[in-house]
Image (cartoon, rainbow, N blue to C red; front, side, top):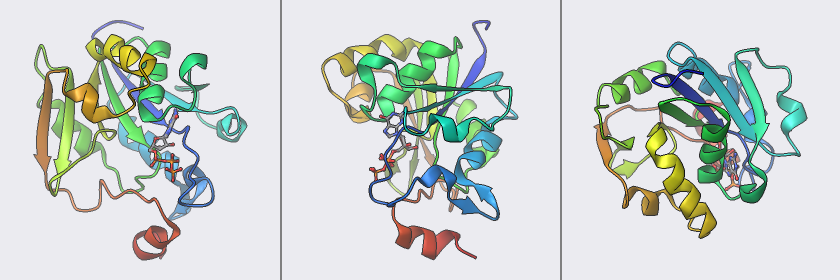
Length: 195
Ligand SMILES: Nc1nc2c(ncn2[C@@H]2O[C@H](COP(=O)(O)OP(=O)(O)OP(=O)(O)O)[C@@H](O)[C@H]2O)c(=O)[nH]1
């Protein structure tokens, strides 16, 4: 793939311990959650990768040709969202990466369009802040962060906050209501998703 392109990374290697069953396959309006992440990015990206784990990979095989399904690179498997982002960057060569978890069933393409408006040369990441809370994995990462993420993973420093302290990050206040709503517990599902 060319440089100066936009890739999509869908983080799908979590264990859903709090939810109690795999969140990716829970449905909103008849569509599994992870499809909302795919659909939000699809109009913008040149290609996309979904990064999961050995246990789940077979369950994602029905998806589309523009989407690669991979697992975290061996050394960092299961180390959290940064491991997934690194693995996605390693698989897809792009300049910018739109990143999404699989538990945001109201995510919209407009979120990514708005974030992209804040990109300029030298920016390493564009991170939304919604109601005062940073949303590090519904965000945009520049390829310049790949080696810094690798350094962090090597040191088992797994927090995005630590990464951002070493990078040129643009934090963008956003006032979306549901787009960033992430479903961690069954109670969240009952309250916000179930119709
Ligand atoms: N590729 C990859 N994705 C991950 C990893 N850990 C978490 N994720 C994904 O990152 C997103 C946010 O993770 P969490 O909300 O903590 O999800 P989780 O780990 O499944 O949930 P809990 O077990 O309840 O903490 C979700 O889309 C997860 O699937 C990982 O080690 N590798």
